[in-house]
Amino acid sequence: MSDYLAHATIKEAKGLIDAESTVKTVHENLGLLLTLERGIVSMASKSDDEATVDMLTPLISAQEKVAWMLRAFNGKKK
Image (tube, rainbow, N blue to C red; front, top):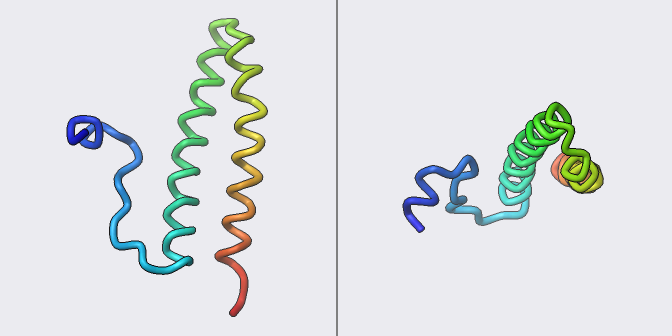
């Protein structure tokens, strides 16, 4: 497990004790995933791998919606 974490783009979250910091961390990590997934879509498109593009496109759309909701949650006034 430590080898995997040493090479992971998304690092293990520690010390999350409230909703705001937890949501902020999830949002940041989701942003990293979206960046990686968009890169995969770009490579797949250049390789004429339409099956991969078709599989990831709706996933990215759904994750973008989640990212929007997380931003909205952390942007609300108390």
